[in-house]
Image (cartoon, rainbow, N blue to C red; front, side, top):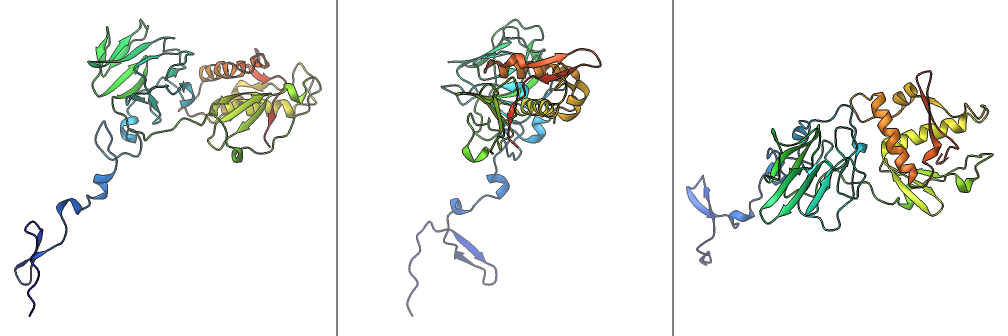
Length: 320
């Protein structure tokens, strides 16, 4: 009988219950795969499994200004981002450069918070040799780390709940890449459907902006060679007003295209718990800023009386 080959001295062994013998298993401890739950990404706040940058349960504890929706947060990706980021209630990951001013803006910074509780330049986050520090820039509503109001430059721990006015965010010194991605800056060709032109007697097609909705839920408004991104709530408002202008083609010019404020509040798919007239006023202001990029902001008009109304004079060219 041929003797079995010698086994390496460090080969792991297993117990044969029937014979009471130890048998080789042929695998090292490192070959044993951990349970699926252990392989899943972990929330940096509570260490539970998470599918985004922070788990849904932790994000649900972040306080928001009354009626705030995701389109009131916007920013630009920094040219030289660090590993740090701010995480919002909707799992948005706002990457930070080494020096970042957060405020109401408008700015070219990583995050603008379009809400009256936030100052134009509200707080400063800065990375130095000692780590990240947070400074309030003289705001009325204050800046907080956890439950402590920031007076001067204050050190930030690697994971912290920060409050800018009445908006809470998570600060992560080493944020994961997972989370809600920002919409693309340009639309892909297969996201565009064939538009139709609205016949305007006093505004030719060349002077009427084209509004196209992307699969992401955002849109792009273009006029000639120029274009601008349109967040989802602004997109819904422009589509509603443009369609009303088109439908009212037989109405006298002074009354054409107006949509009552109560109707707008009911038609817009708000992401806030309960939208108010204040929310709409802020949305209109942001939409005018978007239209200003194409120099057509004066077309978004308001009317007092009978509860108020808005219209988009001249309409838009829309996708069908």
